[in-house]
Image 1 (cartoon, one colour):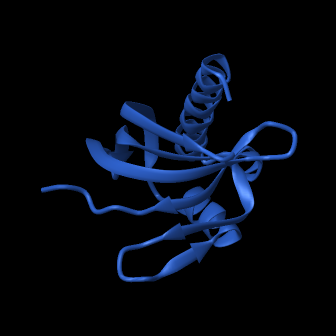
Image 2 (cartoon, rainbow, N blue to C red):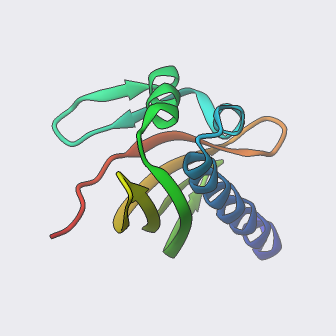
Length: 130
């Protein structure tokens, strides 16, 4: 893989990570369906995991209005058709009329599909730092 291919992959992965954050914010089940691998799972420290369909339902059912979401501090490690992506997610939300800003770290494992798209295979649900 040459440097241009790596650069193109980084741009595609950044776009996919951003699209995922925005789809979660919009509670967009159709977009989540496209962005999550068929065998996607959300893993939680301690060993519990949530399968793809339950994750999509949970996102769509959360009682929070997301006003804006951005990603910062992205780091992308590429190798063999997979990528480990980490960073910070900043979500401005409204919950019971109160506006809050939630900043949390994230780590997602992306895989390239046969048609060249990048989908999330595993997401880690990390605790919000104090």
